[in-house]
Length: 287
Image (cartoon, rainbow, N blue to C red; front, side, top):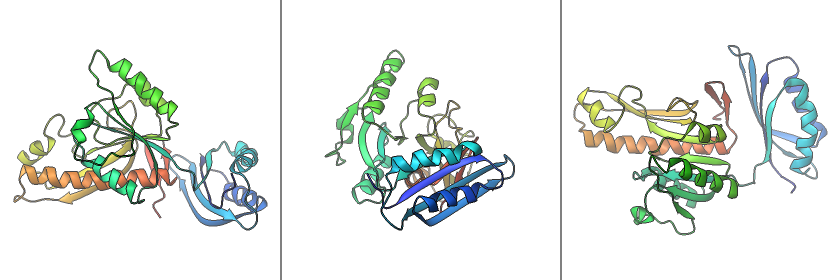
């Protein structure tokens, strides 16, 4: 289907001529560059770029653009994507008992603030757990999990990802550890959110642990999921200062607010092609 606006993202070993090759190809294809961001990582010697473009004349099909750009990308060993900006990105949300991130994402989705096609919600808790939320129009799947059923539950989850052509999986406070096999399959398209005390305060009631230690800053981290628990490439973080006046309950309340906004930003940037993985880090073209 012709596109009025496309997004190209790429990364490759840095060398002269990359920008010239990209811009020359887009010009030859009738493209008009609307926005371009680039970054040269001198430590890894890799180059990163995001280009938004439309067409001065009739739009070319995205498939034709991809076929033509493949010849440009090959000599530079590029990892790249071209997509129609209007094409919906299908998102699957996984959630456990804590539902503040789910509630926030549902609201942002309904008002169009986070443009995504919500494929389904999956939880290891019954639908009744979220009776206070408006889940109308959203498929809900209860996939209970125990240590004995974990493998079968993840197989069912993966079938859902494939059947629904899911582009991104979001762990919206999903309190289950994904297996190495599943995290490998979801590489680069699974985002998690958690408090930023790790690895300092592990386990249950981290905000209470932080309160006992007199912590003055609390925060949240959104990152891509890898086999290294809570150590995947970081997309976004935020913090908030607290004081001796704050109770453990105040910390929990403020922590929920930070988690909501950090996760929403990370998802929006990923869906808009603003995040490119750079080894154990990310390049994020925020503007």
